[in-house]
Amino acid sequence: MWILMDDPCGIVCACWTHSLILFGNFAMAYGVLIPWYGWTAPAALHMTIFGILSLLAMLSHLSAMTTNPGAVPLNCPAPSMADESRCPVPMCHRCDGYKPPRAHHCSQCNRCILKMDHHCPWVNNCVGQNNQKHFILFLCYTLTISTYALMMLAMRAVSTVSAMEHLSQRNRPGALMRPLAGPNGYSSHSGTDDAGPVFVNCLLFFEVRL
Image (cartoon, rainbow, N blue to C red; front, side):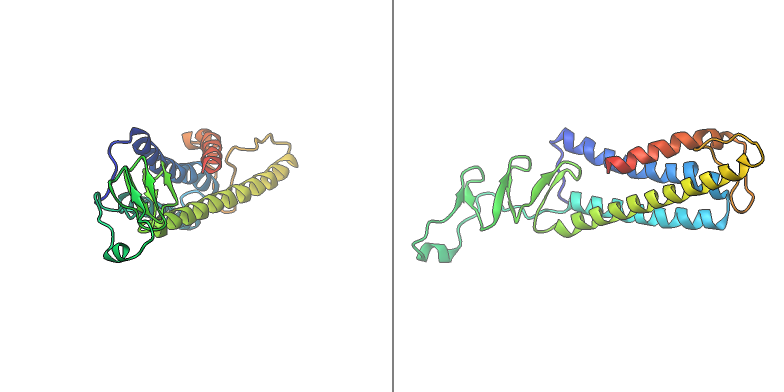
């Protein structure tokens, strides 16, 4: 297993990434879905979809973090064909070995990486030949859950505005971000309602950060 343990910043960023995804699930469930739908089948369906996508994002992140990105072995000898040609053989003075084409030396990994794209602190690893697929999958799953959460927040806002207009006709005060009765008549007065606006605002912050 390939993992970098000598970069505290990368380790913190990788742990922070998983924490944001888990908090996004918590905020979506207890700040949006349950106050909106209650403990019903639609809420369970949305939480299941969001949870599966988040799990896939975390697994892709772990794969990108623990996969050897394509590190060239130290003291790698030059290929035999290079001895017969007159072209100069590229060598890495830091790795003290042969530097293959399209390989770049990473100061964080302290190795030459094949087809290196960049060193990403959020996965605590280089993005190279062997883990590009996992990194792209992580980005796609993260974009999907972010778009999904923003769509649910937009639908929740439209539903809240409609409910406020309905309540205003009855001369009842309403708050924009407070959970209101959903289409199934659900309306809770527990502590979850008071925490709803906080969770929603935190979820918006989570989406902007991603």
